[in-house]
Amino acid sequence: MTLSTLRVAIVGAGPAGIYAGNLLAQAVAALNGAVPEPVEGQGPSAPDAVEIDLFESLPAPYGLIRYGVAPDHPRIKGIVTSLHEMLDAFPEPGAARRTIRFIGNVEVGRDIALDELRERYHAVILATGALRDAALDLPGVDLPGSYGAADFVAWYDGHPDVPRSWPLDASSVAVIGNGNVALDVARVLAKHAVDLRTTDVPDNVLAGLEASAVTDVHVFGRRGPADIKFTPIELRELGELRDVDIVLYDEDFEGVDPTTAPNNQLKVMLRTLNSWRGRASTGASRRLHLHFWHAPVEITGDGRVDGIRFARTAPDAAGAPVPTGEVREYDVQSVYRAIGYYGTRVEGADFDERRGVVPNVEGRVLGQPGLYATGWIKRGPVGLIGHTKSDALETVGHLIADAQAGLLTAPSAPGAPSLPTPGSLSLPKGDVLDLLDERETAYTTWDGWLALDAHERALGKNHEHVRERVKVVGRDEQVEISRPGVLTR
Image 1 (spheres, rainbow, N blue to C red):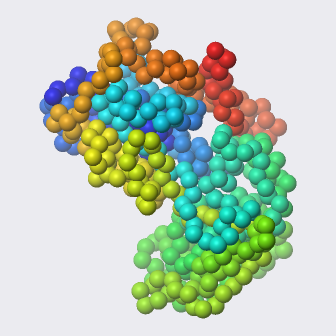
Image 2 (cartoon, rainbow, N blue to C red):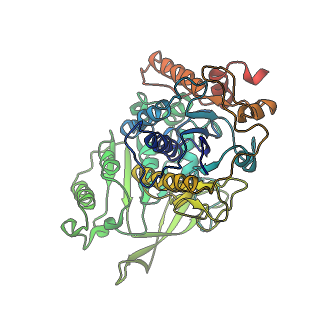
């Protein structure tokens, strides 16, 4: 089969979805000599052009980069600049449509069915990521005062679908986990709100943090210091917190030798931890405690959290943590679980409940030809941005190969696909936006995001504490700024 224009829908406009769209556009352009070829193996029967619709359940793009990265991480948030450039990079010369088109505030499975997408596109790529907290089977985990880290992160990042307030009435807090999310949560809890004023933190979040009662944050890991899953930059930032003492415990470091660490990254982090062990208390008003060799046993409380119980652990012959028989208890009034994320399923696609992923082989969804996956929904919630890009490269390579081999089914929806006349302002016949308009779905567009982006930047410029931006939190408010009047039609 020879395709003239390959039409692809991508579900999810976080890094995974945007990387996939960008790499797919590059791959097809490379076949026609437009840019250096990023994907190997294309033959002469590949498509001449590609049109990509990027669906996002939120009104704004960027997924976890906008709603899952702590507000005091400007270097990581700089990824937004490159993602923006990817979405802006491939206009179709002389045509009414962009090569990559953003369609926001549309949830697949609610506003449009996955089967309806498959009727309108040659292929669909799932890039929904992992937004929920992984489950923790622990007595007391459902007590008031026990929270998932993902919910807290969504609150302080201004996610439109979470409550505007957060209970910060606990003076002592436990954070379970030894990864970067645990450090983010601990750092935001321990940090003084005044030191977040220059970030893009929403005003309601800033007000909540300013009223916080937190004085002590305890981070617990069931393994030892040599098994931490942090990154050096995340760890180093803890030591830079103003008016916060870092507290470590010598017993946790017995037998730990930084010089024997298996890689330079871990050596750097162990040296950092050792340097903190020698610090004297400054009498800071807040303390951040790092505990190792603690496996949670029970969250205690009568009606709400009042403590947490751990089994003290030690390494066995293979290095795995095993209980020593000692039990330790800590008086805390809140517990945050930061033990990982769980994949976001899409109605109509098979889902592995145990692993929280779409069953696939190298991005090809099993038993559903023409359906693909990339990012965390493909491989699970592990790895950094670089892994997401390589994931997308693999998935896109297989999609192109399937197109060349004639394995993709042509769109079957009435009138699809039909391109507009070059220079025309009309939409293609059978365009998915026609269906969304019929259903009065208040979708947002790339131009709408540019308007919202400009609005947030203006709010930041005019704020009493000058910032790069101030996030608009409410979903309807975001939609109204993006597409004025659409909610009242």
